Amino acid sequence: METWKHWGGNPTPAQLQQHKARLDTLIAFGELLNLTTSSPVFPDKKIAEIVKATLIMLKDDLSLWHGNQITGAEAEVLLQQVFPE
Picture 1 (cartoon, one colour):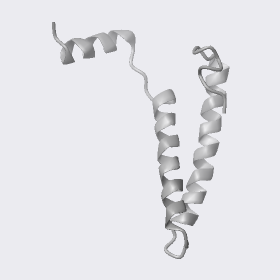
Picture 2 (tube, rainbow, N blue to C red):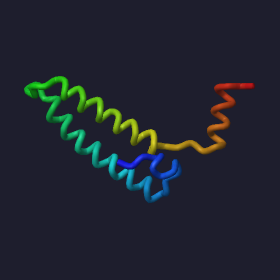
Picture 3 (cartoon, rainbow, N blue to C red):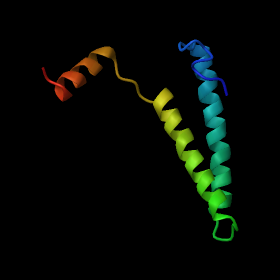
Picture 4 (cartoon, rainbow, N blue to C red):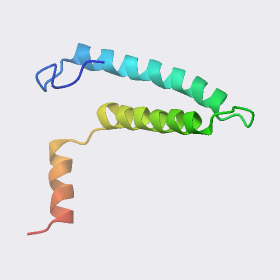
């Protein structure tokens, strides 16, 4: 998967859409793997842990890059509330 640095740190809307679509696909596949590896009869618990951790990271990435974003004004209000001068 391409990185933000690859795009010069400023991805286009099309690149962001492509990134989100790829994350959605990886998460769907990860859910399938997680379902399989989390079964009590799955023999390798270490692999199950790796799959679960990777799925969590993918979901975190999705939320970080494509979740709800606050506006600049909302960020300023929040900063003033947390760090009053």
